[in-house]
Amino acid sequence: MVAFQMNGEPLSDSHGFPARLIVPGFFGLKSVKWLTEIAPVDRDFQGYWQQRGWTDRPMVQTMSRFDIPAPNSTRTTGRVRIGGVAFAGDRGISRIEVSLDEGATCTEVEQLTGSLSPYTWVIWTAKPTVDRPGEIRAVVRATDGGGQVQTAARQGTLPDGATGRHTVLLRFREPEALG
Image 1 (cartoon, rainbow, N blue to C red):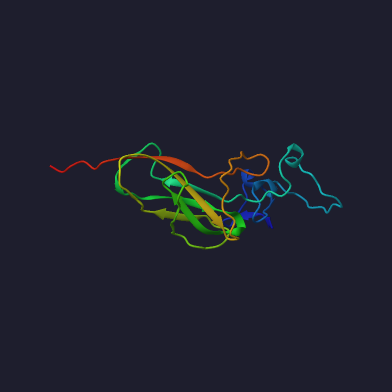
Image 2 (tube, rainbow, N blue to C red):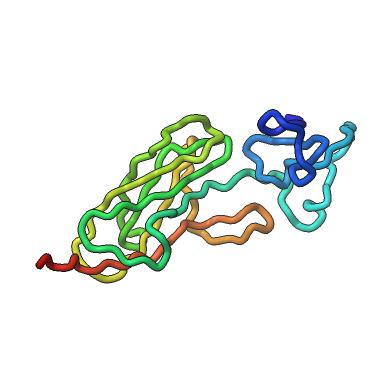
């Protein structure tokens, strides 16, 4: 797809003016910016980033993350609200699960935005009960629309995009006694 506008306005320089390519399901490596012409070639063209070790098929990796509660905050025991987002490019998200025991057991969470489109981020939330004070290592994982579960293997962005499951440390204390 060739894009020359964003939100009804010409692309800005930082977004690739005069035009850019958008390849649904691929991360930005294949969204070529500052496009001025297109010419067919008779071979597999290796662009700037591929020549530096990046993948030639940059599929968006399935990801999920925590956005609430805030990092380094302490909550009281009982029901606690946790939440975040998940994304898998054009494959969409079919399921999101949270673990409060470092991944030993997982519970499916509610997807607030459902499936608006396979191209949209999914907002999720959960309200698990924490019955004792202390620290809990929580993990979130998503499953894409094709049934592929987000990998636990951690990898940096080069060469295929970052992978791994988001883990946060949650702290809990007893509620203060009234009066």
